[in-house]
Image 1 (tube, rainbow, N blue to C red):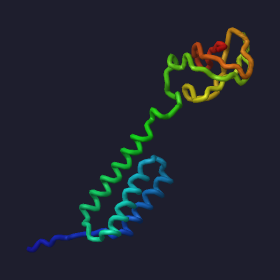
Image 2 (cartoon, rainbow, N blue to C red):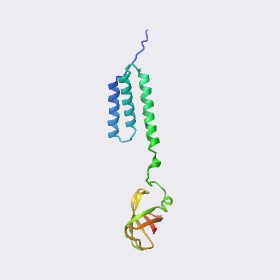
Image 3 (cartoon, helix red, strand yellow):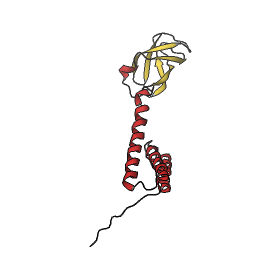
Image 4 (tube, rainbow, N blue to C red):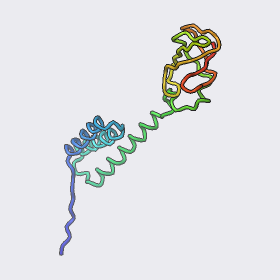
Length: 154
């Protein structure tokens, strides 16, 4: 019984089809990961077009390394800490935030306050205060009481 070495080489257009398919799949399944594997496949397509007999193992290694590098660079350059959203912060961390009153607030009368960045998931909050604060004035969060923030004039 003779063993034959089977060598398989993917052509550049096969890598290009795979790359485009992965990028299109990203549009259907928005996880923002498939696009990097699609771009890695397109990079391999370009390399295979320049050097056609690179070999399947080298092609796969280049695809894995380039895709992983693109995913790593994406998450390294676009860190979650760069987002200015305050969503997910605890109520204690919301105390001290400053916003703009968009509906008058007075004792025994709810108003509304808008924050420049979302505070615990929302930009606009109902608010209460022990003093009259007019629309357009800035106010600081003193406490969070359920779904209402208590504010004081800044």
